[in-house]
Each structure stands twice: as structure tokens, then as C-alpha cells.
Image (tube, rainbow, N blue to C red; front, side):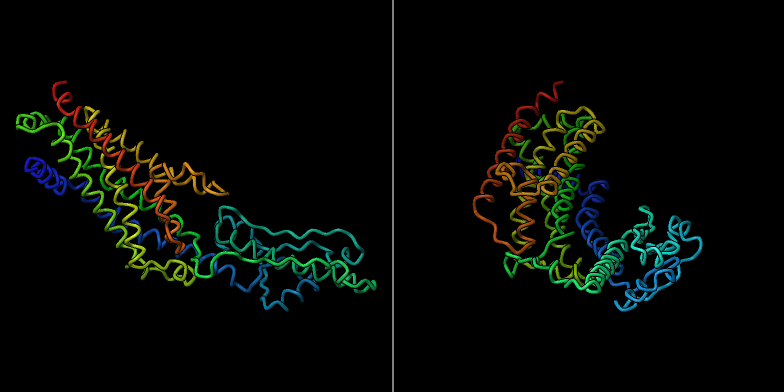
Length: 387
């Protein structure tokens, strides 16, 4: 035990002196989540600002007095679009889509001819694209009102065509939290854990091998398991520290949210933080063991960095499978590291209770992954030095 602690103390001291490790810890744990929530808040505010915007930019709207009257009755203001509206949309000088009314709109409509209204926008102008949906909803309302009026003028009761009414009924729990953009937070957490301990894992294995400092370490009377446990425990400590700091950063991050809808959605309490850590800490420990095992097979720091970056991409992007799954989650999701943890964290964000079985499966998988990786490291350590 003294040998393991000595190796751990030596490795953790070296890791804390490494600027790359410190930068990853600070960025991934203290900056990443607040920055992400700030971006989410800004995006939602932009969407809501376009939804609440009560103005319409139009060209030739005087050709459609009926439409103009309908827009004004809905509480909207009408503004004439500039002559070079297409260029301004491309240059993002306009933040709204433009309604284009064709010549002789009213005359052709009175003659029961089909007319076309155009909404002009540019997909590269995200602000203008966000205004597309409320404008289309406004025009749909006008089209429906005009159709009902035409029926009434011909003596046909509009109710004949409205015999079926469609209503939505939400069957979820009343206390269930709404989760939209915050469903990306588990993805960010896992990425922070993977990146946070990566450089420490590389430096304690491939880095020491490249510097030739593994040989003097092997001259001490220590076993392969003691070396494996000592080195892994230092990397796991850093990864778990990143997990703890990242979860704790959720609390001050809530102060940065200036969007009311996101603030109401993201209600993160102490009990949520405890459950997050219960899910994340075993994952951080198992990922650290895998990173150490992979790095030990590399002869240089750069080679280990490339391999660990591939591992980081696989682990971090695996939870994105949840975004493409539109139905019930398959049972095998519970057995896949990072996917299982993301699934459980999403349930926590919704305010749901996590069942015992998924937690037990996740712990079993993480424990197995850790033991297999450490066994590989313990048997490989002395062979690597002799090569």
C-alpha cells in the first residue's frame, strides 16, 4: 500500500505541474459548462425575440389591402422593406424575412386566380431564418380566414368543414421538467471528463517512456499491479476532480442564464448534483484506466495523443445516438459506457427517478472495464520497459 501511495503522490504532483493538464482541468471543469449554458441562453433569446417580434417587412403590400388589414388586426406593425432587401439579407443587415406580394394581387384574387406570396430569406442569415415560422403562421391564419369568409358569402356554413376538432393532451407527469437544449449537457460533461484526464494519462505512461524515466521506476521493488494502481489512481483522481468541478459549476452557471424559459427549464439542485456524481465518477475512473492502457502501448507522446483523441471522439460522440433514437431506448444502451450515463443524466434533468437496475448495470460495466484495463497495464508495464 505504501508503494502504491508513493507512486500516486509522485504522479499526481507531476500532473499538477503540467500546464496542459492544468489548462484542461480549468477549461473543461470551470469554463466549458458556463460557456455552453450562456450560448444556449443566447440562442433561445434570439428565437424568442423573433417569435415576439410584432412587425412584418413587406414589398408591394399595398397590392393586398385585405392582407394588410389582417396583419394590422393581429397586432403587427408593417414596415416597407428596402429596395435592396436581397443584398441586405445576404449581408445580414436585415434580421427579418421579407414578404413579397406580387403585382395585381387583389385583382387576380378577386377573379379566383391562384396567386403566390413569397417569403424571401437567406439560410446563412440565421436571424432572418428564425422569423420564417411566425410569418408563415400569420399568413396561414389569413388564408384560413379568407377561405371561411368566401364560404360564408356563398351561403355555406364554415362549421360544415370543421366537424372534426383536434386537441393535444399531454400525458406526462405534471412535475416533469421540460428538457430541450439542456439535453446536450450530459454530452458536454462526458467530453470534459475525457479531455480532463487525457494528458495526465499520456504523460504518466507514453511520456515517461519517451523520456526514459520508466526504467528508474522499475528498479524499485514494486509489482506490476502496484505500478498500475498508482498511475491509474492519479489519472482517475484528476478525471474525477474534473467531474466534481464541472457538476459544481452548474450552480454559478445558472446566474449567467438571462433567458426566462431556459432558467425555468434548468432547475439543478443539490440532489441532482449528487445523482450526477453517482453516475459520472465510476465512468471517470473506468475511462482513466482505458486511457492509461492505450497510452502504455505507444512509444511516443504524439502517438498516444492521437490514439487517445480517437478514443475521446468515440466516447464523447456515442451519446449522440440518443438524439437519433426516436422511440424507446433499446435495452443494450444500458450496457454501453457513456450512452448509459447520458441516458441516466437526461432522466435526472427531467426530474425523474433513476431505477436501481440501470445504475447497477452501469457500475458493473465500469468496474469490469477498469479491472480489465488495469490487468493489461500490470502485465504490460515491465514488458514495455524491456522493449
